[in-house]
Image (cartoon, rainbow, N blue to C red; front, side, top):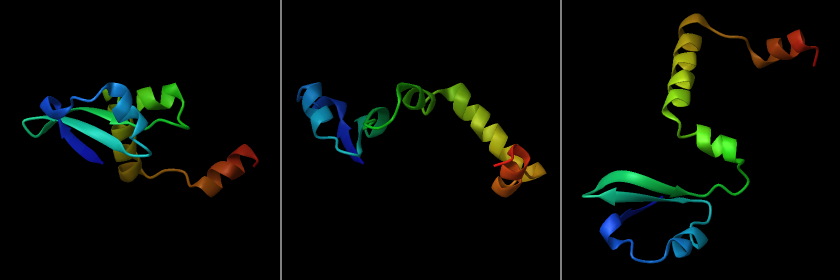
Length: 84
């Protein structure tokens, strides 16, 4: 991951996109992150969108918390239930 101050980001956006590879560039203002350019090759638009959606991330966090507190179903048990 590379960080770049917004005031220093003077190259065309296409140049950053072409050089991102499998990584990311986090844009900062006074050292604080404000935006990111991330590689999404091989990722569908829905996955890329949901991975930064605050409500979706909150739902995932609540689910993980509940799973830790109450337990869950193992992958083996899920396959058995689904007949796989």
